[in-house]
Image 1 (cartoon, rainbow, N blue to C red):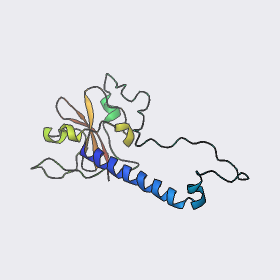
Image 2: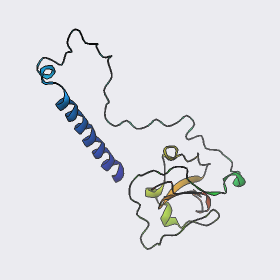
Image 3: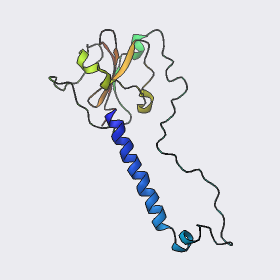
Image 4: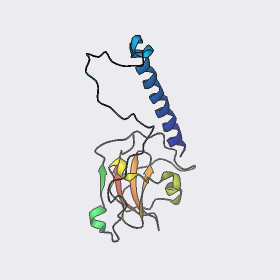
Length: 160
């Protein structure tokens, strides 16, 4: 939640900077006379301005979780095709960094609410089956069972 607030502040600052730069780049005679173009110039088409930060729309079926789990289809460890920069990761206090693989049990401290990746579609992660969630552990995304913490799939280096 804190990361989203910080991201929104940076986005608001960037939008304010762009608006200021556009006003400064506008010729002075247009600012004084209402911004109208000379009569002989081509009139631009109307364009709706951005309305602040708009969250990406969830893809159709983003939460249509499979009711059954075909373990053989999921049990893989693989490298992500793309990495996303989303902010720092703070592992649970008292735990050390390690590389996880499917079949291991992830300790409960790692799958507290702040580590759940709820917007998994934004990071090219597939829809988790019922009873499973994507968890961020360092730069990796782990698909775990929420009943016992068993790792079903690992995608390495999703988060840079």
